[in-house]
Length: 76
Image 1 (cartoon, helix red, strand yellow):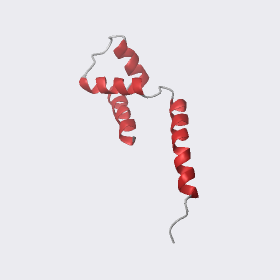
Image 2 (cartoon, rainbow, N blue to C red):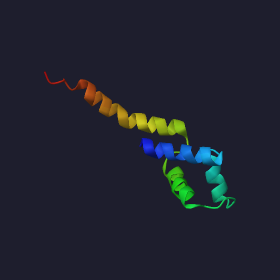
Image 3 (cartoon, rainbow, N blue to C red):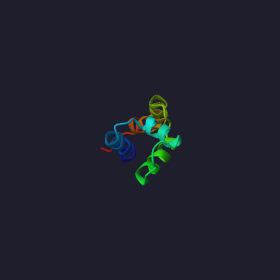
Image 4 (cartoon, helix red, strand yellow):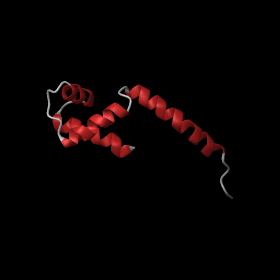
């Protein structure tokens, strides 16, 4: 997951634009959809654009795992 989150940041630094702006410009046909951008645009559509929504969904998935890990006794 970390690798997926790092890639957009690299492109944002390279193009000096946030992912949502890159996406908007590409969808409007204002920038060339290079191979590196096509993959990123697909990820942008796949993942929730709202960071808060993403974190909430992630927390919902992580919480049961943390609960199970914390309630499992450690071997002696």
